[in-house]
Length: 277
Image (tube, rainbow, N blue to C red):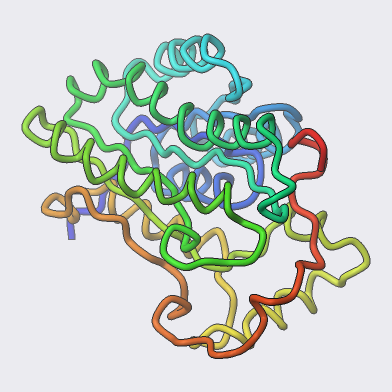
């Protein structure tokens, strides 16, 4: 196995919490220098950077509002300067929202597509020259929402499907130029935003209940996704190009016959970062 990522230069977006933080910490533990992007609150990214530095690694946090264009490009320039180049970018940053189809506003639609689809497109453009120099890797984080429907997720699911298609197409275009493009579609990975969306629900109980509906019997963790990202970024995955790897404990492999799709959701995703939620 040629998994040695020692000395690699990695940019992870949306790295202050959840899956992004887990991926950033995974690369740092493997010996990579890491630039951690965050969008609003710096606390999570700063805490992760402090932990990496305490363990002898190299890391720094960079802020950018992914709803706008120029901050994305500026963050790319700053991260590349800090890392002195770039070997891997993980496009993880994304926002979600649940809303009945007929109630979705144009503003809500636009902000999800801007953050979830336009931002990784622009960021990949911005760092492409560095990735061509290093024969680097782009890893786009999608979701199983790209493959299966779920109530009140008409906008979010569309953005995740777009990422799968973008990954496949970009891989064909960039492979001859020495850049590998891949994707990961996580299944249920309960993180902070899930707990915020369901106030009053015990996080431990939520994780336990979530696992009951997954064939493997348990919910995933950020580390589960990080392990796949590290493999895809390594030379061991050199022949994997354009694929989006589903990491879901078997969720998309079973037929969930039932009437759950007829019921409105009890959770409320998007509060605090999607207008009107």
